[in-house]
Picture 1 (cartoon, rainbow, N blue to C red):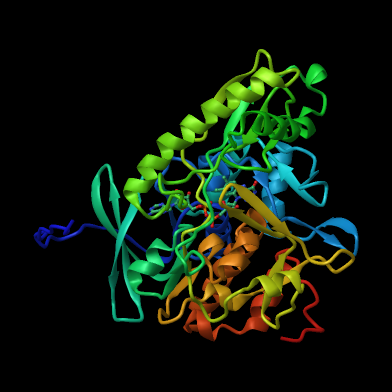
Picture 2 (cartoon, protein in one colour):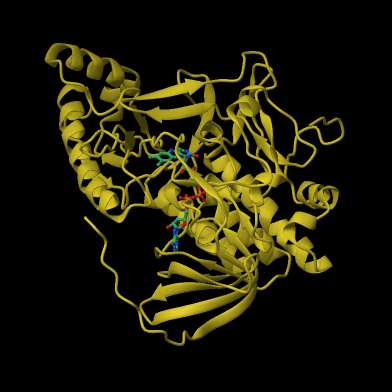
Length: 453
Ligand SMILES: Cc1cc2nc3c(=O)[nH]c(=O)nc-3n(C[C@H](O)[C@H](O)[C@H](O)COP(=O)(O)OP(=O)(O)OC[C@H]3O[C@@H](n4cnc5c(N)ncnc54)[C@H](O)[C@@H]3O)c2cc1C
């Protein structure tokens, strides 16, 4: 069907304000970026469409940080520090953090948390860094100064449409919205139309922990047996059901959201998103009925929350000065412009399954993250951070997790300060000065002295 168009009459947009740094998106990447810029004394605004921070970590109900740890020559170690670690400490002081746990057949470490604690820790840290947070503001467009420079971000709010002027912009939208509107080149999926499949997460309450024991180890087997018996597959394999800090509450990652034609629901297609929300909730309900019926200790359990939104793993990935690849990750590659490290395996959510690929056993277990993946081609006053940074489809299947998002966010917020200080573009920032600042602020960059590219 041919699209029909109408012409919107031109109108003046009220200016909400002018800031040195404008950050779009309050996920782990946007949080770290805004904190780093705000703490540097830069007037900073963080624009978020929901009424709370945390991104997929809260809105999509993840409740687990991945990518903060690596298996370094056989030893499980935390390798992401800096702002990420401060957030952990704040959540710990609130009693909102689990002990790190082994996951993916005990091959890697992750750390779970209370979703409310993440939201409140982020609120507090923003206030302390004097970041202006604009909630319930949906970014809808950009106004350009020239082909290479963004002048303003346009947001829709309950009090109308506003423009927010900035000197430097940081796109932490997860979907690369700002960068795409500004004209930065991007890729979607694997080049053959396949994106990583989304999932809708839910949390279960009322578990009897004594009776359940380590039932999370049993559930995948029970599901497989049921599949074999009925010949009807569940939406995905490798289910994750694990206790939260209070063992009567468990989180569940059991769904995979496909369109009726079997392709992954797209997080940048309004109709598919609408379909996916309904399908996601339906899957949560169905699969929960099954696991409650067969799992000891879950007899009186109930769904306490289906995440507010479908969890989107991948949409646009902006093409930057360097594209991080699967080979970089599995080869534990070093980069001269390291801004931090990533030790998470490649975790590909493919049709009906999840495929994990690890760096070789006994290896250093992490790759460095190059500054260049935050620098989009063609736009001069913009960083892209988090899961929409410059990575290949396979590279993003690893480095999209929260740990790397904190890394790219902190680096971009800090580099924004350096760029403003020296009146240069992000591309011209002195990488060594950036690395010094990041290290002084607690970040771990890997072996900065002995690097080859
Ligand atoms: C089901 C699922 C399970 C996952 N499990 C884990 C896990 O256990 N651990 C882990 O570390 N990672 C997990 N991930 C990966 C996860 O996506 C990343 O960890 C991380 O949340 C990405 O961070 P981000 O800051 O780049 O983007 P996001 O977390 O997606 O945050 C983007 C933010 O921008 C806002 N935003 C977007 N567009 C606009 C707009 N136009 N206007 C205003 N605001 C906007 C959003 O509301 C959101 O708050 C999972 C992903 C999914 C989907």
